[in-house]
Image (cartoon, rainbow, N blue to C red; front, side, top):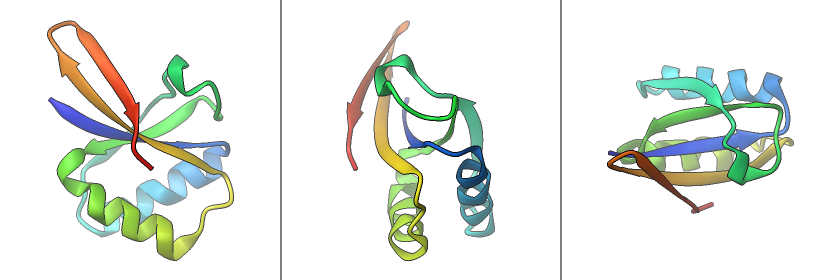
Length: 86
């Protein structure tokens, strides 16, 4: 399974970004920010990788001040491999 996590420094922006994704028809949920990100408000937005283009379009058009990074997470067995993509 491959999914993406959008990390923000503000919870307000986490929920605003989620609303934009949901209005675009993307299933998303809040998750705890992974330790590997080493930043954030403690919450991030998780969505499937096939919705990455929609998420990027939203990030480019809305310009969230607290956006930090986007990560791809690949689950392999019981391990998660995380890499920064945006």
